[in-house]
Length: 236
Image (cartoon, rainbow, N blue to C red; front, side):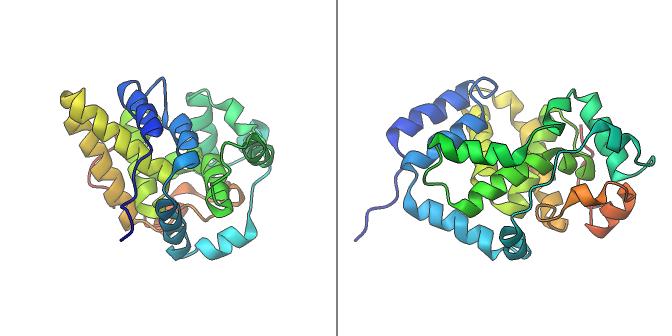
């Protein structure tokens, strides 16, 4: 009889560090830590989940990474378009450096570091593409760059993609509130339930080329992706 998969004890210490100080030792670091000793069964299961999602096959085959957008190009987008909303979100939250990042180079650097040696190529690509469209997802869903908004969007992602990065955010947050901050339980659970329900009801946002839609009215896109009147709560 095969032994049950186990969590590496060295990784467990890093997980607890993230639970104790989630703003200092965030999910980005924890995600990188996990792969060295991740159970092979879990890696295969995550890969199988990704491959089972409608639309994933074409996206993974194309391996699309968009060229960086500019504020100048976004300024040409008409009011009410995705591009106008995206530009406002970037400026309101001081995210100009994200806009100019070369995600092809970022992907190359991640692989060259050797830290993600056991991360399957398809999951690696989706991680990089996920970073690239993260702010588009904020604009499309209406979730702001607040603690509530980020937790809700993580649950939205997990509902649509079942990706380890977002599963880890849920795990760290629930452990943090369970053992350290029980007063945070109502706010965190409202965010998770809202995002999860919203993500399950909406069409999948992860395989679209949103950079090609910047001149499309935002409400047209929200209607197309069933992002209208599907949330159970208003974003805080």
